[in-house]
Image (cartoon, rainbow, N blue to C red):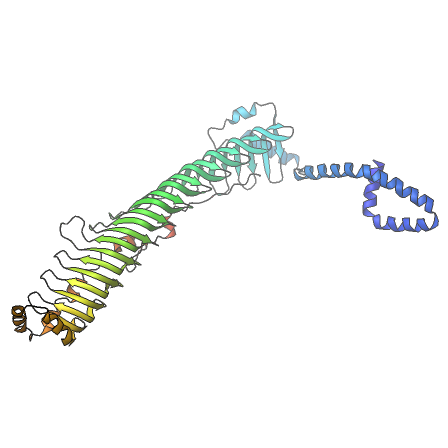
Length: 466
């Protein structure tokens, strides 16, 4: 022991001791040299032993709690609390706890423990009452909550179920103060595995959880009655799923981060139908749209979409037999295209903003075609060279018959391919009904969801120590 204390003394005053030894070396070299050799030999033995003792003390200090001083009256009040204590959990048998011989009272700075103790640690059944209102009733192991237990928090939330190493782990039920409840699997204090969450006013989620969030297959029901069945990832619809809207619309297909993306099909309550690709909640890519799936004759469009609008090459068919084959831009005919009317007339040429605009050829059934430049469905500059080339290829009788009608104005003819009557009906059915539910807006044809439409649920962090 003397050597150990000397070693501690040496650690604190080593600089002064070394200076003193150097002075001694100049006067009495033999004595100083012998002392240094002796000191070095002893330190080799003492140092590892002392270090081990210091490590043990350091580790023991982590769990060390200073004794709490309290008066006799305060002690009586604490004991009276546990004498008249009534458990919050009906499954917890408090009378059974009182019969154990190793049942003791342990007082901490901000809480009190009454229960079984083994070697000074909480082991077995016990109750913890915290000064802030937090309560635990249940099993302990090695000073931690472990096994079956019930915990009530200061904010009136509560948990009942299995604990492992101080945290919910296994099967358990968590009740929020506002009435929401989760019952299912837990892992390390987080919802994990199969579980059921029931929110307010009919909202619910039944399915798989991962680290506190819906993840995997599940069924989510919203307040307004909308229902989703499918895959989730990190609380968002992600993967394959089907969604039923309260207004009768149905979407079935792929989701990415909560929005339709990839292959899918959408059916409106009006009978309209779309089957194709989506991106960021909008029709994007190749797809087929049908105005009324239940009707024998109906409008339809098959082609390319960009941001929920017809854009690129496509074929639009009217219920009465007219047909357009060509390019679209911003939901109207734009670029090169062919328009065939149900009376036999046709136009082949350039389009702009839904009008015949640019070089083209128009022909009314039974009449000679017109070649030239069109502006807003009117022939403004006829190409005589193309007309002569066309006439040279026709039989003589046909050329004579067509010449009799060549002086007619093309104004009335050019009105037939006007986009005003048929272009108004060419636009596919709006997804307005979806937006009213999802965004409360009728001006944006998107499937985008607000965060509240995802099962983002309250989380509870569990502190394993009192």
